[in-house]
Image (cartoon, rainbow, N blue to C red; front, side):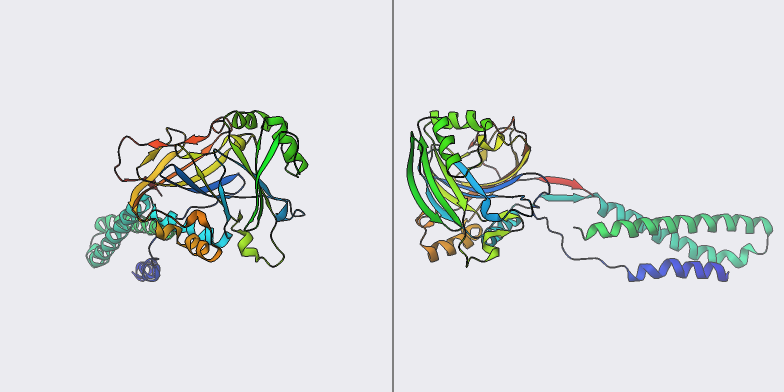
Length: 370
């Protein structure tokens, strides 16, 4: 009997010390090892404002000021350069506004295991009470021993499974044929907006100015030139006194802000496709209506909100640095949509063009996870 009491104490003691953690939140994670872009796209009255950020991977011997972007736009944009830490706060706010609804099967699994544990513990108590009676008959004692052994085994297994599953509750100069339209310094970026007669001229200008374009880019440049688009060529050139947190945060280089006229919301992708690798894209859109881009990126969330909380950090910076492109933000509620997906080079050969969705109902992604 003493052995059984000791075993019961050993089993019950850890249950007293088990603890649960606080509320579980999901945050958009920056994936390791693959190209990653994220953006906020605000579209209002044929004007599009893009806040663009991209992850960079550089060899240890290479400095961040070797980075450069080329972003096609359908019209000559207004330009600003934000701080990396402010962008982190902005995208975190957008992420918290678009949380998926999580169905955690580990919750149910843990409850079932815990119920088995409680039931087994109750049966063990019953077995202990019956022990004096079982001693009177040998056959009864054999039955009692078998029942006690099975009860202990079930209780131990249920307890171990419940203990294992509990942590999941808390995890919870230009070439011929190229026009330099605009030159300015925006945040950490030295920016030139150019337009060219053909792809060859654009690519030659970019090579002469230190941009590593290749022959794989030619078709994409040619398509943009034929459509009359221009190109924002931006180099990372921070001043000596610029703080590191303003240049890069969490592996993401400081954002570039662009505002331009556009007939419809568009996210340029064709140049990204020429890199030849899959790219993960996280895109938040703000517009009068719920948007869709077909089947290319999955809609994860849609709801109407006030836009100021999401863009607050940039609005504050705009007031300090007198950015005109964020002076006249809409003061009305807008539909916030979240799109996320991993696209192949083939899927990125065409830009993402958005259109009004068939309905304007709120939507929240539902995930079943352990």
